[in-house]
Image (cartoon, rainbow, N blue to C red; front, side):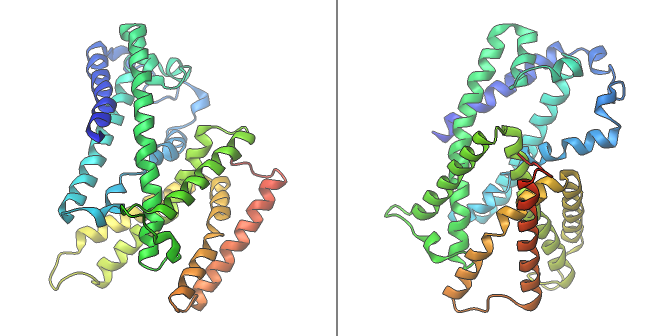
Length: 323
């Protein structure tokens, strides 16, 4: 079933790349290539900054293979799946974006309705192209819904097993399904959908919040990888560490740049979302009779709660509006 859904999602994109590649017009592609002819787009740096959250969003989930690593038969498959997934997505996104600029100009592309790929293919082959892409989008959303449902449930389930989350998140059904985690994460998803409905928000606001929320774990992951490479922890004697150190530092710097690009509104929203997580952390530590906070950790937790309260107040009085 997963193979059929994957093929149904990828085949139209491959067809799009092939058809648009043949119809590609160099003169259209090179017209105002840097976007400086449109004052609304701003300078190159402003254009790059404005795309950072979208770029981050489309690659969220690449790490999904590592989330399910405990269920893999071979550890090697995890690395292969992650690398192949990343470079496949990168190639497809780059080709779709660049080739589209050779069919329609930037203002024409900006005026297209979502999914814009449908409008581009329609401009080349006619109405059936738009129908094909829209059908493929429906299939893709169904497949993504399944994968994200499983991914969201797996994370607290794994965390419960290593003592980071309360034990009840680790409960499984007779078939090994993380039943409690699956129920709670899906209820939260539905709650957020209702909130955005009444807030008259958009899909873009949702993925901006999701992208900003994952920035902090990304930064800490990169920084921790660099720290391990510096100290030699988890490395065997004489094992090469320069590459991992560079990768960790690069990931950390890039994560900080993304925080800057995200801006304060979405980061404040994340503080509101992260602060309640302290309750579950304290719950988990007490279940295992461990010390809850060291002094530095207590200060960080207090600061997070303070920022969360301040963010809630600023959103309430209208000073910032992530939604």
